[in-house]
Length: 325
Image 1 (tube, rainbow, N blue to C red):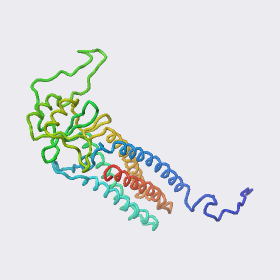
Image 2 (image 1 turned 120 degrees about the vertical axis):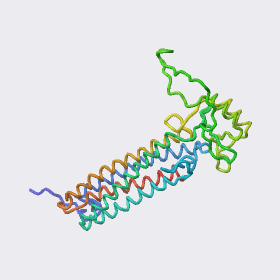
Image 3 (image 1 turned 180 degrees about the vertical axis):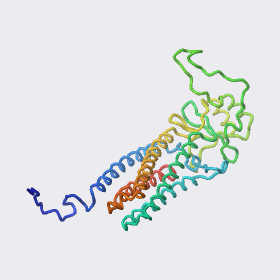
Image 4 (image 1 turned 30 degrees about the vertical axis):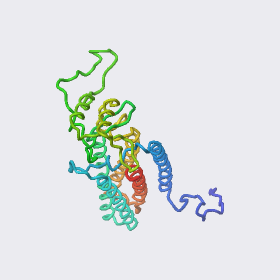
């Protein structure tokens, strides 16, 4: 017995039924996921924006942080590799569009090619982000954290960064690392810093060409460089600990919040990209096996394409917030 009751709205866009908005259930659910995930990323980026505005006078300058390029050691290439990563991700979105279009025309060969190129683009992006993380964590120049938690960097007379390793005066002998077995039984000391404050202070005194640069941004949009006298005084009176690279506690680039947000937001986006790559690989092999050819529909390619375009769009905002603004 047919119990379907006509409502008079079946022919309208919002009439319900099996395909509201002329979209399948799978597409609608993907759009719901995208909207909810977009709100999540919006909250993260809004929090980043508020934090940066609060510490706007001491926030790290992206052009000075992301200056590395693989296989080009010692070459200043600000933002070049990040721009390359962005280009690769955008191009992978283009190949996904072409894969979806080929699916609409039931062209298995072209769908296979374009899905393969999309996967390759995603793998390059994820690998590049892993390399960028590794470089960010390791650092290159090193800095000193003050008693107040600020960061002091070192530059030459022309304002170019100077690595602590280039001027620190290493003392003879070694200091034994504290362990619970040879001291307070309930205390273990963390890893020893590469240089002590005495070694850095003595090295600065022996190199008159080296100056201290604070994390405070001046009116010209540059970090404030102290005079020679102020450099020696500031380091001696306020220097507390040598830091190299970045982690969730301190970082040599400036405000610790910058590293916290960088790891969290770019890591969260990277997780999305990695998930997309895995899903794209599954879809790619299904295309090769002829799964969608037998179904006479490549809608699954279109659904994963929506997710991939979303990931691409989110990166545009992340790239803008972290690297351009």
